Every structure is written in structure tokens, then in C-alpha cells.
Amino acid sequence: MKHSGSLSSAKRSLLETYLRGRRPPVGSEATRITRRPTREPAPLSPAQEQIWRREQTLRGEIRPHNECITIRPSEYLDAAPLEHAFAEVVRRHEIWRTTYDTVGSQAVQVAQEPADGFPLQIVDLRAARSGAREARLQELCALGVLRPFDLRSGPLLRVTLATLSNTEQCIIIFAHLSIVDGVSVYQILPFELASLYNSFAAGKTSPFGDLPIQYADYAYWHQQFVKSQEAHDQLNYWRQELSGGVRNSGWLHQDMRRAFEPYRGTIRPFTLRDSLRSNLAKFSQSVGATLFATLAASLGALIYGYTGQPAVVLLTPTSGVRKRPEVQGLLGHFLNPVALRIDFSGDPSFREILRRTQAAVGAAMAHDEVPLQMLGQALPEITGSDQEEAFSSVGISLQPKSAGSAEGWRVTSMDADNGGTIWDLYLAFIESQEGLVGRVQYSSNRFDETDISRILSDLQEIMEAMMSDLESSVTNWLLCLQRNRRV
Image (tube, rainbow, N blue to C red; front, side, top):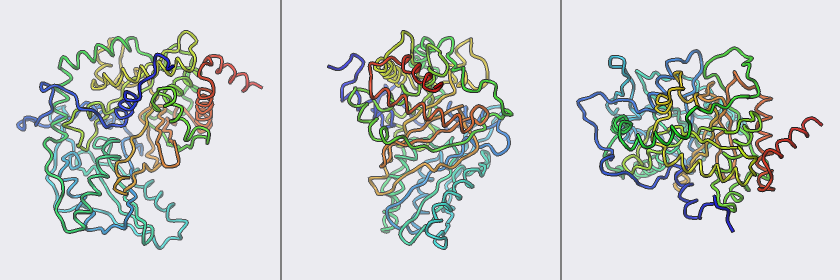
């Protein structure tokens, strides 16, 4: 018999679908997203505003908003139809030819006119030794992700086609975070790009029509939505859930030993132990939980062990507004961090923590269209310009699977270090062909490599403990871990 907090297979499937960005359509006609009034400048979306404000504080070679994505096509590509395909993607999606400006003190979007072609950079790595070609590819990504974007002049997109052999190529995409999200690069882009390339290579026209709305229309709608009754109702939920703020404190290094540089960070890929890589998803299904809830419960238990706080808050980037059918096919940045408050009071078992986490995830996903900074502004006890910091600076995500794999185009996120991080600690998990893998992005001001090694090791210990005995007390297990360390 399932415990009371488990989900039916249908509901679990729906929540997994929701977390991965494929959203069921909702929304009344009154909140439907339509074309914005063209007489007014296009505003930034609330998420873009947060990025814009953060950009104004960056110094030196810190690029926390520079993204690097690679696409491995299954066939050898000709440059001309690929350039044509990218030009058509950019023509269809205004956001990929958008720059930013200010009108008075207000930042606005400026959609540039479509260009006749696309500036695809071509790099041939075949002259390098076979074993060195991947290293050269990594070097291209590492250098490219550090190259700054000019938000006022643009473009905010750069693409390189690298040829590794007579049968293998890699498309490297560098993009500013303000124009992309996981659904854009893992699902929409690979499908559109592969379809367009195949059509143009065969001498055919585009299989796609014009889009009914653009990202700027959504941004205008979202600025109006936050004033609506629906947004007010969601805001009331978050006020009750997070009133007073729950800031994870008591970290390994509270003294910030290194010279403080805002958003200075680094990235480190990691592979889970064999016992976890392919078994966590099966375990989650067997206990009626989503894989994401299992990952979040494990990280929450780890922070609880480090801080001793009765409640832990994690942030997770969701694209909640993508549940609305008008924007499901749009490229752009639709992410909004939501807070997952996990209650550890009462000496709960792993099973109970998993149940509480599952409930927190479900509630958060039902109220995920209110920008987090709006919540911070609505709570009188919260101060500071970066409202995310009021609740937590620990993030977790489970990246959506690529839709391009069905077309034979495989999408990956290169572990290219942009020198920055938005949160103190951010763990991104990816379900790959080899099982569950991940990367951790962390603040260089707060952690060093030894700290991160300890965090990753302890996290996997907690995952294995949860899988081996759900009825075990989290507190007892943490005490055992501390005793073993002292031996």
C-alpha cells in the first residue's frame, strides 16, 4: 500500500512532464497572451529585468549569463543550408535578434530587422590528432563562453560549426541567458533547426509558418499579469509559505575568506556512483515520487545536516508560464526561480521528507508565475536589490531531455566555465544515455574544491541511505555520518 504522500502514475507523469517544460495548456481567455500594443516600447519580462539589473553590477571577466550549448548532428552538414536554417530561426523568433536599450530609466527590448544571412563561423579541426580534437573543441567552448556580449549593440547569439572528422561535426552555440532557457535549447531549437536544415538541403521551403506572437508580446503580457487577481492569489500563497524568509545559513565557510567579488564562480562536472546513476529514477518511481523530488529531498537533507535549521529552502528554475499554449513554441527566457521550503521538524524519516518535498514541489509548480523578485518586494522584512538572496542561494534543477534526439541531433551543455555563478551553489542534473550525471556551479568566494568534493560525497551518501532504508531517521543518519568522520 502506498503512503499517503505518493502520487498515482498519471499524476507523477504529469508532474515530471511539467518539470521538464512540456506543460499542459491552462489559462482563461482573460489571461490569454496576445499581441502587445505596438505604439509602446517593448518592456523586458520580469526575468529579463532581473538579468539586466545583475548585468549592471558585473566587473571583470565574470560572465554568469553566457551560455554554451552544443549540438551533435547525426549526419554530415553542409554549411550553406545550415546558415539558411539559422537565419530562418532568427527571422521567426524576434528574441534572437533583440538588443536592449533604455527609455528614460526603463530598459526596453529592441527587435532588429532580420538579416539576409547568418554569420556562421566555420572551424576545421581535422588537422589535429584524433585524440586532440575533442580537447580543441573544449578549448573553443572555453574561450567563446568568456567573450562578452554587448546588450545594446548585439548580437546576443554566436554560432560555430566545428568539423572534427569527415563524418563528425559539432554545432557550438553561445547565447546570452536573456534569450534562452532549457526548453528553448533542448526541445524547440533542435527540432526546428533539424527540420529547417533537412528542408533547405533538399531544396524545399520552410515547413513552419510565422509565429502568432513573439517574446516581446509575452513580456508585455507578464508585466500586466503581475497586477492581476490571479497573480495576487499566487502571491498570497507565497507570502504564507515564505513570510519571515528562510535563508540557509551556517555554511561551511561563513567568514567568506576570499576577497569578495559578486557572482564570481566556477563549474565542475560530476558523475554519480554506479549505485545511483541508473537506480535513482527507478527508486523514485517505486515509491511514488518524481526523480526531481528525490534529488531535492537529498539536497535539502544535506543542507539540514550542515545548518541544523528546521526548514530549508531550495530554489529551482521553472518555466511555469510555458504551461500557456501561446508560448510553448517560442524561443526565449521564460525561467522563474521558485522556492521549495522543506520542513525538517519532528525528526522525520527519509520517507516523510520525500513526502514533504513532493508536496512542496507540487505546490510551488501550481504558483510559479509570480516572479520571485515580486515576492521579495511584497514582504516588508526583505531588503536588498537581489530578492532571490532573501530566501536562498542554493539551486537545483533536472534538465529537460532533448527533443532533437528523435531527429538524430543530440544536444549537450558543454562544461564551459564562464567565470560566474548566480547562486552560491547550483546543482544541475541531466539524464544522459549513461544515466544520471550532473554539474555543480558554485561561488568561489564561499567554497573551494575541497568543500565541493565533500558536498558531492555527502550528497551521494544521503541518496544511498534513502534508497536503502526509507524509514530511517534523517537526524540519526546524519549523526552516524558525523561520528564516522571523527573516527
